[in-house]
Length: 453
Image 1 (cartoon, one colour):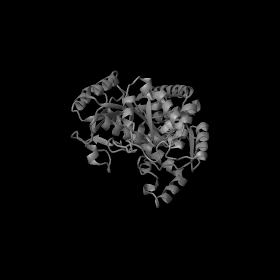
Image 2 (spheres, rainbow, N blue to C red; image 1 turned 45 degrees about the vertical axis):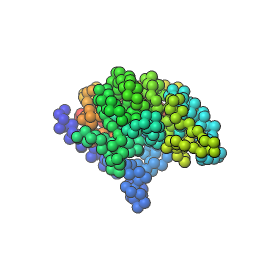
Image 3 (spheres, one colour; image 1 turned 90 degrees about the vertical axis):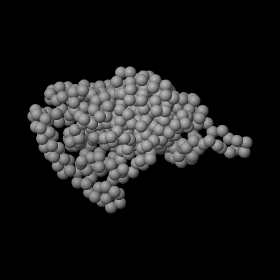
Image 4 (cartoon, rainbow, N blue to C red; image 1 turned 30 degrees about the vertical axis):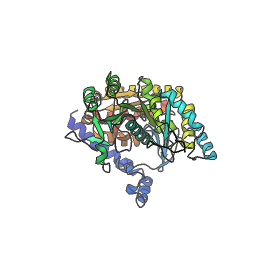
């Protein structure tokens, strides 16, 4: 099939599927029209409207690996709220623990014993001895940047093209066509962008040159990039080079495990034997309850220690903390999630199903004769619209087909499957079942056959 013929077929199918989707969901459409009087775009966050070509379904309820919308459709969820619901919906241990926490009191601005247990368990998983808590991974990343500035006496943070580290100015940056660091979205301060450095993933020499300038306090990285439309894995030896170069330059290294922690206890930090100075996490670590955490070496923990003068006065304070950080509700959720939901058995289950998902998608691609690469990482799979995986964000963007990715999403939605945001690929959650995987593979194979026939 020629490229033009395939592109025409994609557009035809998308038009048909969009029409089918909207015709079947009048209640969701009516709710958004009603909501437009009180919320911009008729949704709680503007991107909920802008990220999809179709109307967002309004959720009525959820349990396990499925949710239902107000029009009565059930979805096997392979997006799992962008990794935040990896534990599944309403896991019994977390429901029990958060209910009990609410009865005891969910906010004090004082410590509770669960904080000790959560910090100790995070230390066992990620290999760092000291921990602090926030209300999201975005906020954990802000804390990591600030402590790195104190530790190094430098200002800038270095990130890799194609990253996403949350809603903070220093990482919502990109390179313009002239190679200048600029705000990635409107509203991000250009002054903040000037505090950031952006380099390509998997290129140690460019990284070396950037670090040798001596103004970088922190390299913030995902162990594998998860937000570039496709999954981007590190080249063999890249992480060894990253760690060696940061140490050589006196730069701290932070691994953001917010998405990659689904591969197992301790995420890719543990799986690949990485040795960061800092680790940040959020989303699924507390089963989707607002919660973030950041871990650090003992030396960095010493910098956090506040010492008082003879009259109780404090000095040399570091700008960390927030009113709702480390509250009992989030801590109870995190403890229950890690102790009773995110168990070795759960990770083994999701990895096995992820392997079946990856293998089935590869077989569908082979049968259809499409030049696509199917990647797999633990419970996660995905597609690259090219024969080879992408090594960096430039390569990922070059082969991305936005219309095709959006066709995949609406095709699946019409068949009771909730797919990832803009082509990132499916992830099997803890309560996912072989039947869910079979449903996904049936939908995927049907789409590919529709594309080529």
